[in-house]
Image: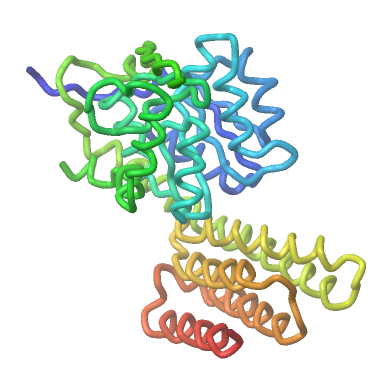
Length: 185
Length: 160
């Protein structure tokens, strides 16, 4: 099998961050990667209004925003009746790196979590992870989003099973949510 | 009664169309280099942006010290600005801004209420960020950077 290159010019990206300097940084990285179709907005509510008309292929959102923060935005997206929207790959950014926040982001349905400050390398690594290791979506009574388990250990058997999976995941979660070694391999 | 089984759905991956072949992705090093260069080009602009954030931090601190009615809002503003600076500094090559922002946000998270002594510690962090931007200390800042971080850590530790 031959190696595949990447051509990001086909992708549309929506960037949601209330800080325009952060948006400038993210847009510069995306532009340099070859992405031409970009939409930047400053909060979750505006993102929801623009997401339908713009039809992004991926959404990159900050956590802390007002009036609607990133986790509420992600939950709303995951509840959308439109398949294009509710299955959308999402990368969440946050200035916080503690495990509680990482778990909360994971449990609201993000694909990847990235601690600020953001580098071009870390952002590219997350994009490659989503391309190379697509995860199925899981629907239970309490969760809808990408499979929160990274390893393929077969289908979960129910909500109870999934909860115990989550509870048994220890401090290794942070490493799983931060695949910095993708580019190094 | 046990919960219903989880449903597994495999949706199409919209990012798949970025792949130009069938095999595993191999990164062209030029792509990453271009992206890193684009960030470097923003470094000069960042000093001005950070200065504005620092000015607003100082303004919020003054408000917190002088206007008891605005205290909660001012403290919340200080925390938000500090979190922004922490989250941005390293991205633009100013790692020391991120380190100082990290110290300041953690200091504020650890306090239920702020006192005059706390205001002095917050001010020391703002002064340190100001010095980093004024002197354009990029990266970790070498020996000076270590001294700044150690000094602030000691201040926080002595307050605890």
